Length: 320
Image (cartoon, helix red, strand yellow):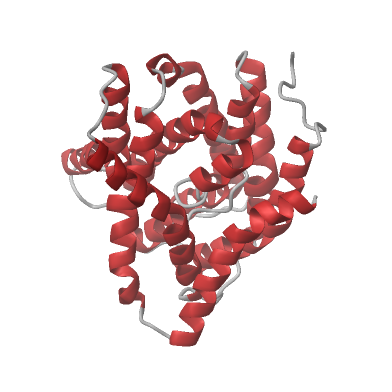
């Protein structure tokens, strides 16, 4: 257990340092803009390119893994939506944000660094595939559902065009696609270019986690949602166990692939959920509170999951 705490301490430590820095220096939210730009447009894309470009191309075409992981995510998403809509009697738009709070994990900022530290380089491929394809799915589902809810008044053609632009032109998608091309044609980039990619990739996790801490500090809890009890349980417990069960049921994956997907599913809610809520003016304060509460709760749940994996209590295949 001490090894697991030592593994997680740098991650939550960086988040706490960012949180503390924001509280002490009291910089405005706008001051974080260029760091977020660096993370999204330079550091994380470099990391994904590095992971994918060094991977045998046959490992990058596991559609069964991709659809299984995304299917598990959206199974939990739609169950949460149905609970909110039919049992809680919330609006369509509110239910959409609530469902993202329980199913959209911080896979971009926290996932790569944590999975690589926990499981080694073997986790690079499943992590890259999950981040790329799950984010693409979220970029499609979020605006589509908000358009159905009436939160987007633009013509359908404009909404569809915006969705396509977000998917095709997002830095994560572009960098992963480039990495796929380099892997497919066995292209070796020049040493100077590779060194630049390595520098940027090394900066991805520290900067992302620090920025996450700052973001949490700038969005204090103002309104705790009643739904937080089951949303938090869904995000931190139900989603990872669903992912684990679905991938075990689908087929024979390397244990590292299943464990990596389970770990990424257990990460706290992505700060992008607040961005979506803010964009459409829906459930904003409660989305912010949910992110902070679930992130704090994950300090307790992530060590338990890693202990279950490392101790062998959680077998690599539930249905061998």
